[in-house]
Length: 142
Image 1: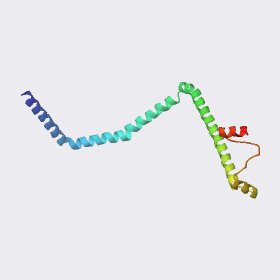
Image 2: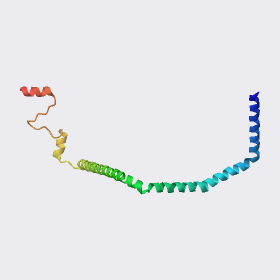
Image 3: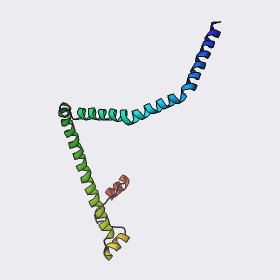
Image 4: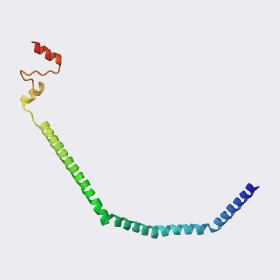
C-alpha cells in the first residue's frame, strides 16, 4: 500500500516538473545562455587575470628566489658542463669524419695500390704472430 502511494507521489512530482519545464523552457534556455555568456566574457577573464597576478607574485617573491637561486646556478652549471662535453665530442667526431673523408678522397700512389692488392702492409721478417698455442709450441721445439 505504501509503495503504491510512494509511486503515485513520484508520478505527480514528475508530472508537475514536466509541466513547469514545458511552460518555462525558453526562459530557462535564455537564462542558462546568458549566464554562460556573462561567465565567458566577464567572469572568466577576471578570474584568469587574478590567477596570473597571484602566480607572478608568488614566482617573484624575494624569499623564494633567494632559496631557489643556488639550485638554479648549480643546475645551469651542470647543463653548461654537459653542453661543453657534447661540443667536444661532436668536434672530435667531426675531425674524425674529415680525416676519413680526406683519406677516402686521397689519390694513392701506384706502390700503395700494389701493396693494398697484395694484402696490405705485409709481414715483417723475424716477427712471429700466432694466436694458436699449439703452433707456438711447434716453433719452440725446432
